[in-house]
Length: 97
Image 1: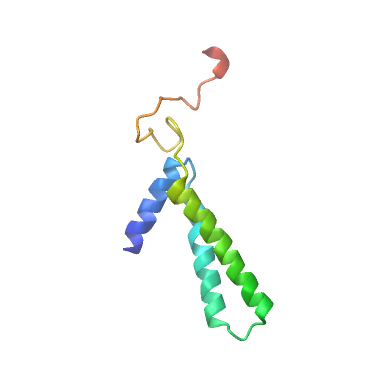
Image 2: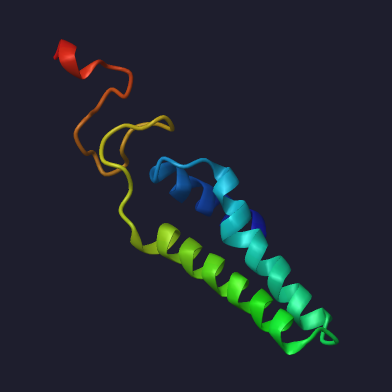
């Protein structure tokens, strides 16, 4: 199930014209931060709160990027627009028409 979710998230990032390395701040940073906050309860309250805030910010940012924002319009470097938007050649010169 994790592999399927990572593949789907990668496909969605490609739709937004971002590569799969964006999964690191969106997924792995919140997971690591939450694991640290749960497993290291001997930390001071401020350090524990800071880790949870960092986790929340990156998790919310990733959720907005993956779930709510529209994909890029037209073709991008990862392929054609799955919704069939206008075809745009990213390598064309705008002056040449």
